[in-house]
Length: 174
Image (tube, rainbow, N blue to C red):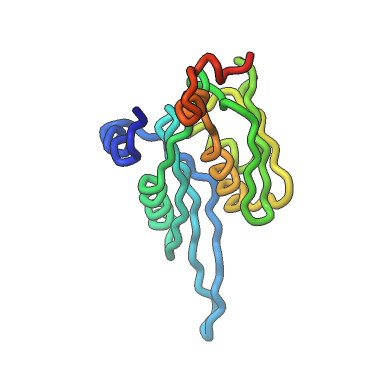
């Protein structure tokens, strides 16, 4: 029986989480006396065992924006089914805005072949072998959200067998 999201989040309370800072961006607001600067940060948090989340934090100072992003990432964690604990079950495409990503499972020893903002997502998630390609926008916000949209569409053979009312070996095609 599948564990609920609340049970998964409670199970990671004592665990050491992997935190990856993806980008820090400085923005300026022009006011009467000059410019006011603020910072935005994107952080990926995961347990390295198929659970990860992302967060965006904005503040007047860098440490505060990172803290806000980390807190938001811990609250918005998603479970992803991994094959053999190292790669994805099937190929998938994710889109968000103008960003598009294609994720493919890879054989053992391939490593993480992904660029830009996608690499920290796979590292925090615990995926060791994957082939990923991004097309369209290279904006980190769009790439991370497109990657998570794709990862949330992963269906393991066990899930498919349960929905169809079949045995797992009838679903697997090898």
